[in-house]
Amino acid sequence: MKLHNFNSGPSILPQPVLTQAAEAVLNYNNTGLSLLEIGHRTAWFQEILQEAKDSVKQLMELDDSYEILFLHGGATTQFMQVPMNLLDTHATAAYCDHGVWGNKAWKEASLFGKVKVVADSSDQQYRYINKGFDIPSDAAYLHLTSNNTVEGTQWHNFPETAVPLVADMSSDIFSRPANYNRFSLIYAGAQKNMGAAGVNLVVVKKEILGKVARTIPTIMNYQKHIEAGSLMNTPPVFAVYVSMLTLRWIIQEGGLDAMGIRNQKKSSLLYDTIDANPLFDAPVAVEDRSQMNAVFFLKDHALEAPFLDLCKKEGMIGVKGYRTVGGIRVSMYNALPIESVTSFCDLLHFFTQKHG
Ligand SMILES: *Cc1c(COP(=O)(O)O)cnc(C)c1O
Image (cartoon, rainbow, N blue to C red; front, side):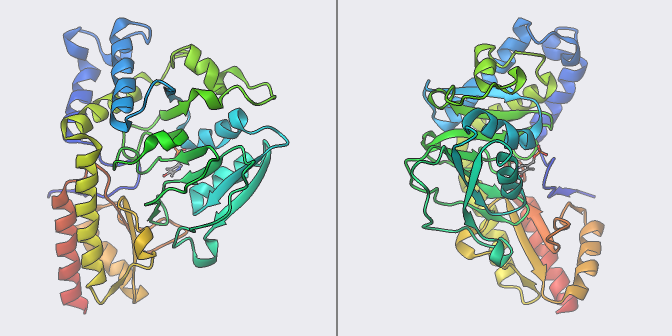
């Protein structure tokens, strides 16, 4: 049976990336060595790292005022590392709380300085993104989560502000074109749209660094990582390689314009199908719906278990909603083919004919 991988993360990767990564584990580029047994300071790995960095800059159209880092720890480490590097003890950072991840991010930041939550949609179960809220002009930065993986909302217009913008883009990185040069710092754990778990991408504008008074532990210090060219210590070599292959694939497929068009098509097809279906309800504010993670519910809760059973039987993987949210969540990252969405929509019709 053909499987359709709607996992929320780690999640689907392009088939050619998996094939090349598998080959590299046995024999990297006909060197006779596994990628897992070569040094991170060899010319081989230097090339991999350089291509990965160049690809990020090319895709996001960033100039040399930005540095690209590949760091350990997952996005959760960035919840701490961002304020450690950017927020002085007596300064204030502005945070948007639009779900599980944004909530964790501001709580972590409050360990380092003052935090003002300037936007919060928990009054409606995080089913929308606040607009037109005030941002204190003296805030060290404004932090937002570009795509709320758990709740299924996504920023479609980033706030206009003179305050430096910081974004957790873990679940929609490289999914669409945008003015990425409006951000001072962007981070993303790789395992949703970019590669294998175990590495973080950090894109940082150099001018925002070096301004806090605290002593930053070396391994947490962005400036020290920049000086060391992402090679302060052994980087997650394999995870960086998989990210590089995925970035190469995105470029070959036509870059962020092509990804944006595909993701728009896939998500419209799914949301249109849900909206037209009498059994299902997608309660997220229409203008804030995520192109990456669609969250929806069966109006009759008793039908949820049979629906999930049918999904399982038909090879639809990873569609159960997050444990605190419930319902159904369908993740449609870059590598998910439109055929998987079409098959899922067919399944919705089939289920509705049986139970409607
Ligand atoms: C998955 C996710 C995280 C957590 O990533 P880890 O790599 O597990 O630390 C943080 N933010 C967002 C938006 C996510 O989707």
